[in-house]
Image 1 (cartoon, helix red, strand yellow):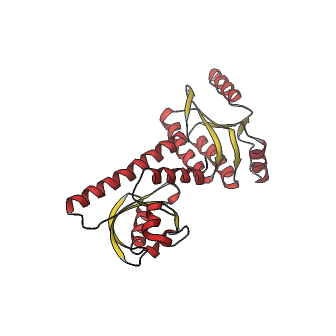
Image 2: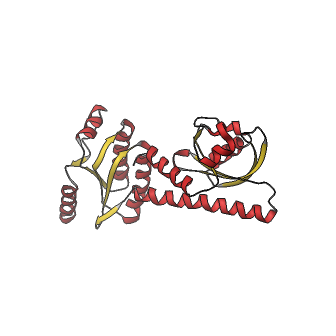
Image 3: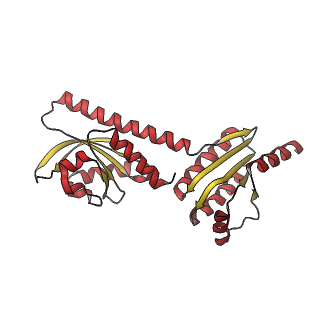
Length: 258
């Protein structure tokens, strides 16, 4: 699943499980998505592509969340569709891809104890979404120890630069933790890589080598091979095999002879 599809899926879960006014905001400060509650309250102010600043003081709070990366609860005064301004309790949290998820509830005449309850409720919802996202992210990088000192990483779908960076970080940590001698990157399920990602995969192999292990690439499809050749990447020092089975045979043979 690519980053755009993953973000759309997260947004759908966010909107479907949250009855409050909800927005998804892009890194450039424009509104990417809004739910029906937001459209009823703010009208055209939450149309796709509208600057967040049109709603009022929420824009400054968004910048703080964008830089800090932690869920934040704050008060804000926003301009509603009738032109008037109203106080809101807001929880904002940075999601995958640097998008900001915003949940708003009218502050109205709530007393202090009710305000605190609302803040905690909104924050709990945002934290649940964060946990769900992390589970999906972990499932998307299944590093498997298939043999003693042999790791395999089967990649599926479209691998973009952001996903390749996550893969490298997780794989290198696992190589250290398991003291692996071999790490197999299986690309059988990968249909397409961009030019930056093709270079990133070779950087990953070199990084594995620096950790004292050997990186092996298997299952390269013709489209992926063409991308790598078109870039003029040097594959002469990288072991590439047709299948994961071939790679496992090679690893076992080398360990038996050592």
